[in-house]
Amino acid sequence: MKRLPLLPTLLVTLAAAAMVALGVWQLHRKTWKEHLLARYAANETLPPMAFPKTSFGDDALFRKTYATCAEASDWAREVGRSADGTIGWRQIARCTRPEAGAPFFVQLGVSSDPDWQPDWHGGTLSGFISHAPDHRSLIEEMLSKRGPKPLLLVADTPPEGLMPNSGPDRSAVPNNHLAYAVQWFIFAGLAVLIYLLALRWRGRVLVTPPTRG
Image (tube, rainbow, N blue to C red; front, side):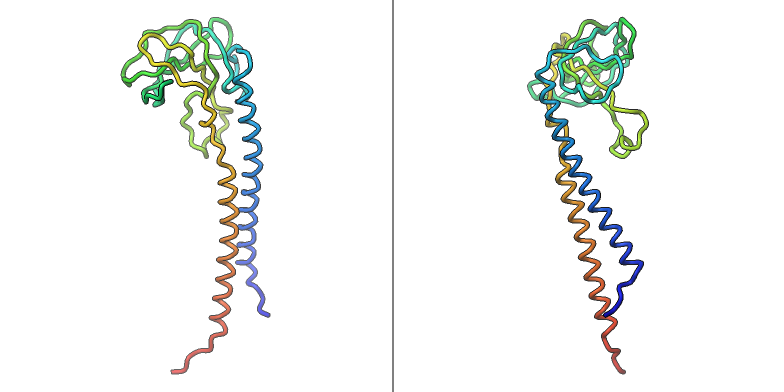
């Protein structure tokens, strides 16, 4: 019986084991995400809370909230949808607080004109908690030391001239970890299968007698 080549076999075994480990990790992530989505669903039924003064993660996403914006500045526009599904530009401002606490972001409403800016300088707000726009890639987010994504107050009632914001949308929180897990398991199986086929082909080549001229 021919011995397996040590180094290639070791490399393929380690690669397949790593892929299986990644698949198992994605299954754990799937369970974690299901619990997280259940928490978000429960948040929508809780009474309103004051918008957090410090960043504390995503535990309060989709919960009703309120805050006072002493001054709005640094306006930004992001593509989004209004409450009736119209595609437009979300009008987002950075707000300072009348009392101590970190500034926060507010999404006032949706406009059809990307160059239009609300004549709004601050006031009392109510709405729900969501994520502020964050343009980090997935790899940057995993490696970033900036902490959790910034939070955003999505206002219930927009100023004059803006379309209302869409409501909480848990479907925007992806839960595709099962698909990723299946992909990693398939990759591991294919790696082993291809290696076995390569060994079989190599064995046939080695035992094929040379042709005589």
